[in-house]
Length: 510
Image (cartoon, rainbow, N blue to C red; front, side, top):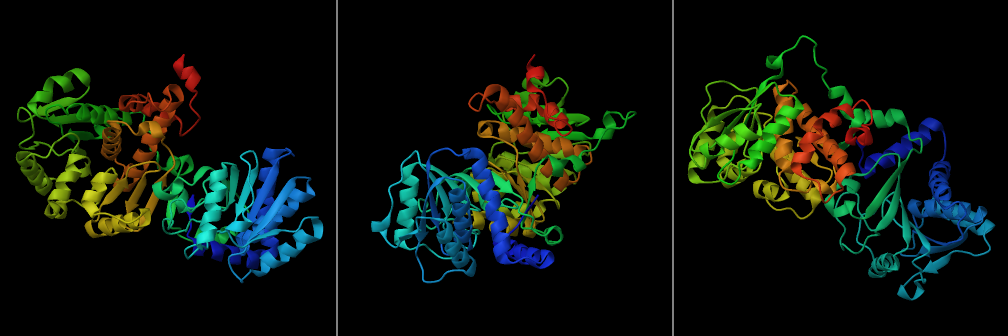
């Protein structure tokens, strides 16, 4: 599913009005009615007080349509106009008059903190103050109103996006945006719902199709692609009946140091579970017995006693995953440098491999085109520098990716895959995956897919999705707190099966 910018969504409205020969008022009526229908379906006429806060633009117009429909269906409604400007949109004014025509109570004007209404925690709030067009800081009393709504702890529904959020940057005041219980957004999700700094303002997201012009939406490139099963299934390669292990590549996982051999075990097992035909673990000698015992399916090559001092291969692997648990000693850095200069295989770099690149940026020039980097946020900061907000983080990552012709996975909730100007947002995964070794598993999954012939971008997008999907299956069984990285490996098979059907977890447990 494509993610569009605020400007693209405005143009989609215009294209829809032209192609369907409808007015902006008719489009607003249609969209707001969809929001009302969703709210009405949930409330079923429940006798609660509904506070509707309307801005002065088209988001406020949506709120007035919703208010009118609530009154017409017998709900107890109080409507407030957040009067922060002398300007009003035409659509707002028309719907303001329509509301006054059917309601015994006219909207209440809010012009300062003295006008703030009392909101009970058992009441409901509909937030229609600002939409995706917010472009300047809020007046102080408007920020106070938003904080007043948040403090009420009432169930809050935001229309399109929570008020106080910009479409393309973090809020000026972290407490100056609505913390919505539900956001009902139009046609497609917005980027802000998937970023750490702005995703926190929406507990649940409902996307409603308001019938925007599909020809326009299909022709637009979008600013990102939201990855779910529908986008992943076409990437899947089924296996040929008469194939053998040589058809699925020979992966190698390079890493480990004294006390950190477990990371190589996890990555190696994950690559095997993902379908690599052969796999070799390249570790210090102290990891030999651990690997041979923990992963009997893998071959093992060893180097120095406690840490790697050279990385010499007498064959060309299909794919290499390097960096997990490898450490950053001087001799390991030297071995890593020599390896990068000689390597011609597809490459995934994680953990200390990224930390070495950050300390020695000249080594980045040795990376093959389409090398895959999988940093967690702190590793990414070491690599590209600090950022002021998530939007700048994305732009700096894009610049890094274009400059060095590499793919970068920004790990986290809704991991982002950056490839030049292209951005993919993963829609699988859960908070239980914030646990030791989860990133090592991802390295193994992507490496295993590379070895089977998936190209670098396909392997990355597919791998991040599988990783999150396997984690979601585990979470259904264990909950978030008990999820371990090794559990994710055990469910990779069900994640593959889940591309074709919903896995029956109860049957699996029996």
